[in-house]
Image 1 (cartoon, rainbow, N blue to C red):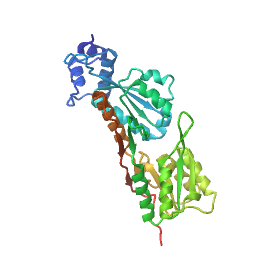
Image 2 (spheres, helix red, strand yellow):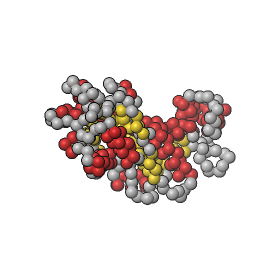
Image 3 (cartoon, one colour):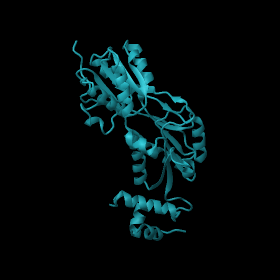
Image 4 (cartoon, rainbow, N blue to C red):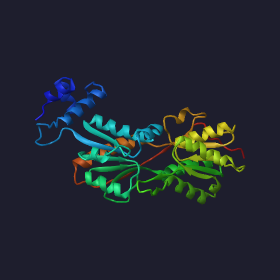
Length: 333
């Protein structure tokens, strides 16, 4: 059986350091890399605490990301979710196994995990397969009707209302929508609640929107192309709602290329509040989505599900808030 000394020798640190890391001593001043190296070594050597018979000192949490690593870098919404998960695990001595659906044999990577956090959109068949790996599982950023499955999602209803209340308070009555389409593994289109709620709000408040709705992908390039598509018409909305900041950034570029001023000629609002949104020209008014917190809460919850088996599933919605910058303006009456 592996000992603390074995871990110390393999990891290249002192036995005292190993002991303090494995006992979650927050006063220990070591780098995150050293802490993770010790946790990885303890997991590899199958270390078990002596103080509690057969109790693991290091749990293994699997992170399954439906985006590819390249897509994750291009849209840091999902990157922030993953960072929230990993930071919680680092602070609580939880060993992490990370994989992407784009990886070859990603299911084999997850077969020995104690708990699983699934980030993104998955088909019913995939969800069934994941639950066969472990019953300690949570899905982030995907609502699932099954009351036995834990999920954390964003409160889109309040977020869209906040967005639209803000634009209408500025006098906008012709508002466009640039959205993205997401498909599950079975090629089924996953509905975007932001679009559904946007259209419901417009119908209820007699906002003109139908001629100004375009959907492609959640990318900067798509935002650029969708905005150019709208610009082919002489009849433009006074404001644009983009369902993600990358789409909004692409739209800003298209408007700039055509010499259309934001917000003087048209207002633009994003969604997510990514790191780039405050550095656009002009800085982007957007809805802040607490992606990092979603990841941190998700890891915390699934960790406690693991300890409390059997546990009651939880359905959690996180609130979003308006980040008012300079890409929207009040219309002159």
